[in-house]
Image (cartoon, rainbow, N blue to C red):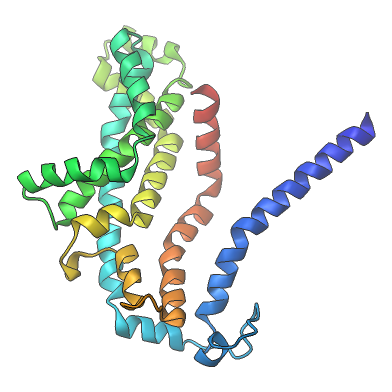
Length: 278
């Protein structure tokens, strides 16, 4: 029995190590390409580590494309979408989690089903709505799309967190004369802080990395987001300027990595709590 448990545990560690390597190797290869000079990028025998590291690819990337402006656009779109999504999802999740009825059950089912919709299915209706609202080719319209796209996920995640809050606290607040709105913001919301933070961060990362909607809805170069600008390093014939592209892609991944590294424990705890009780 003991040997069997050790074998199972060893297999689990081996599988986890393999999964981590599977995730890490593409990023490590990207970092390697970003610091390699042109002659090493053109060699027929690539190596993992650059023999002569250089920052020329980063300088060329900033000279060829407006990366800072694109990063600012992505920051506005992702940050605005995360903030609005959390403000809308928190009271909605509270209602869906606390009130059991056919309407809330149907709404919860719709939240799950909506996650299966492909991008190509919703882009035309979204484009028509934004055109009627005169929000095509604007960051405001893109933020609206990101909110709509991330809201089902945020609702589903926060509903699990709301169910972890004891009802006795709400009943005590009601005895003291607090209404539903005051109970939500004074009693429930502070206890949901880890879940709200995790939801906001996931919504931010989803919007930061999103490419398809930004490509279709934004046409003006000064409004394009970072994922769209990265495609400009690929020529008309499909030939990529590999060094600057790798450098720009490496810089584009840093914000998400830094955010996750800083608050990894809070995100992990928040997701686990929502998953167990959801």
